[in-house]
Image (tube, rainbow, N blue to C red; front, side):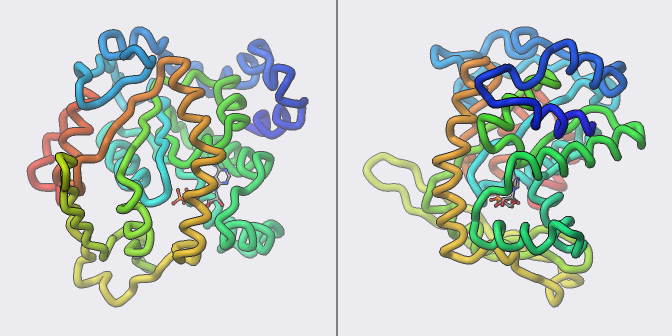
Amino acid sequence: MVVMSRLLRAGPSTSPLISPRIACRLFSSFTSEITIHSPTSLIPNSINNNNSINSSNAKPLILRIEPHGRNVHWVFLGCPGVGKGTYASRLSKLIGVPHIATGDLVREELASSGPLSSKLAEIVNQGKLVSDEIIVDLLSRRLETGEAKGEAGFILDGFPRTVRQAEILEGVIDIDLVINLKLREEALLAKCLGRRICSECGGNYNVACIDIKGDDGSPGLYMAPLLPPPGCASKLITRSDDREEVVKERLRIYNEMTRPVEEFYQKRGKLLQFDLPGGIPESWPKLLQALNLDDQEDGQSAAA
Ligand SMILES: Nc1ncnc2c1ncn2[C@@H]1O[C@H](COP(=O)(O)OP(=O)(O)O)[C@@H](O)[C@H]1O
């Protein structure tokens, strides 16, 4: 999918970035076995007046997921620290489609000490966004590698993050559903600062205990820490961009650059608004319910 970067260079955003004909030709091998749903067939009953779906009052989505999740082209949106990686990764295992996180692609590139490495380190450690060109190139290469391995479908996490990225994506593939995870602002900073990663297995944990008391009719919020198993406990590291001033800048940039992406998908009737009611044990079953999915192992794994 050298395609995306080639198309990205093709012209300013005032002209169509990608002609449907080119997109169709260039993506033909990638999409040949994929059933693409129109958004209306996917979400027939639950779109509200704002053209988005609210998980609290939505009827379950009618999803027609085919074997191995072939037709799934989903996107996770949400502020830093909200849990996009956690829920995208769980859904990807459940449905059997790859979870592709552009933040992970950036971190892999950083660790590779390739030509982009020092430039990326500077951007990421200031909490800024990498350019659309670089991120589209990283994503294109990841999709190409997956395609060569026979992957079909995906759950994207962290892309698109600008309207331009959304336009590029929309021009080449029909996204079925965009899940916008939402959490109270007070919890986001604490969740980022509490995040820990096992340097050996890559497992994600969180040592923060969020306990916001409800007042004046607003509900409280409790999120238990997600502690590592004993084998990982001595190998935990913190992401270099999970420092307070950097997290605040990431939140500011999310509001400025990525909030408009929510509107972009809302206008197209693809946005599922999902308010996280608490930690994984409370939120995972509710998310599955909103997506009309079933997790047979849910009872044992909700806290994992
Ligand atoms: N789609 C994107 N566009 C631009 N920069 C990105 C994108 N995805 C990831 N990045 C870069 O990688 C960093 C880490 O991304 P991610 O792990 O998704 O963080 P977050 O916890 O802020 O959601 C971002 O702060 C940004 O610098």
